[in-house]
Structure formats: C-alpha cells, structure tokens
Length: 306
Image (cartoon, rainbow, N blue to C red; front, side, top):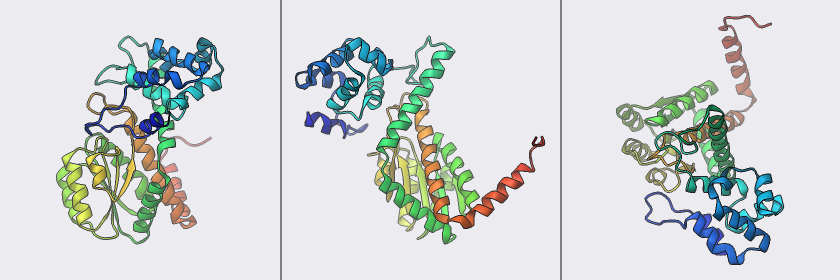
C-alpha cells in the first residue's frame, strides 16, 4: 500500500515521458489489500466510476452498504488525500467533458446542471490547491515582494494570453499598496522591461503551461539582470526551472484541450494571497492610504448611500 501512496503523491507531469497508473487500474490492483468494507467501495468505483465521481458521500455509503467514514478511508487506502481529492482525479479520468469548452460538463447539460458542475469543479480544485500549496514558497515570495515595495524597487508582472488577464489583476491589486507595480502582456515590451530590471526588483511571471517562449525569455532575462524571479506555473514545467521562487499551481485541466477556467481562478487566488501577505507586512501605516482610496472611490458613486 505504501507504494501506491508514494506513486499518487508524485504524479507524472505532462511531457515527462512517464505515464501514471490509471486510477481504475490502481483501485483494481489494491483490492486484495483492502478490508472487506473498503472492497465494497472499490467495487462500486469499478462498476460505475462516472457516478461515483458525482454522487455525495451519503449516497455512496448507502450504495456500498458501508459507513461514510469507510468511503473516506478507502480513498486514503488507495493513495489519495480523501474523498474530495479522489473524486476530483476520478472525474478527470472518466469524464472527457466537452473538449475545448469545459472538462466537467456534458453536451446536453441544462442550465441547472452547468451551475452545479462548473462551481463544483472550481471549488474542488481550490480545496485541493489549499491542501497542496507550499507555505514556505509563499513566505519567500511575500518577503521578496515586501522588501521590494519598502525599498521603492520595481515589482513587475508578466503574462501572455489568459495569463495576461491575471497579471493585469495583479497590477490593480498591488499598486494600491503604494508600491511601484506594473503589468506587461506584450511580448516585446515585456522583454524590454525585463532588461531594465536589477537587483532588488521582483519579476512575477505567470503561465498556466509554463511553455510559452515569451515568458521563458522574460524569466531568463530578469534572472540574468539580478532581479528576484517569482513564477506561478505548473510544477515541473520549463518555466518552473527559470524561477528562483516557484509557486506551483497544479490542476486536472488539460491546457491543450480546454479553455482556461480553473487555472485562471487558481492564479487569481495566488495573487490575492500575495497581495494580502504584502499588505500585512507593510503594516498599519499603509491602512490610512487604503482608507483614503476607498473614501475617494465612494465619491464616484452615482447614487447616494441610504
């Protein structure tokens, strides 16, 4: 069983040349080592994996004739963090979704189905990331960004395509902290800006796949100029090798087949964490400025408060 758990904690990365064991094969191989009650859960998975991925724990336990804790225990026995983690990965295995649209939906879904599936997919990914995120990496990133802000150094955000939207959001959040913050999503301007960086500056490079040559060039240039390079990307991607601080964001969304949905939410969440961390580190002296910004924005409203 230890070998199964070790394998699940280190899944193969896209393009690595290593193919992880199919989830259903793993469940099938684990059957002899499971307790009789857990075997009933395993057989339920093997009989109808698609339903297992979508049903609540109460119905799963009823169908397998076991307790709810047994369902969760089964998921951990076969090498996963719990039921949510198991169902998320199982859904990615058995549900192709609608290619190039969304991985969690079906062609004939009604509006009510879309609401549930899209939100559940996002929530599951966020919860999984909460459990997987590395506090030490965030600590280093927040410390570097805070130091740059205090010393009036440059904090620059780089991203192209969908990630260009994320870095615009980052600029919007960070400049309100009274620091020098700017976002670039034009590849030529990005390279020029990275060339002007120096020691003490921070370059935050965002890419879902981590394979865009534009952002790879920017990260390499910023690093050579002595700036601190923080990357937000998939672990094991080429971009992660260019970063001094890697905020790894992994999810089941295939970037070659689906429009970015979950990845964008996760990247925006990472930016929220960084902004909040830096605001706290800058201390109470920052808060009068934030209060003044809110007061001035309130004056721009077209309807009076009642």
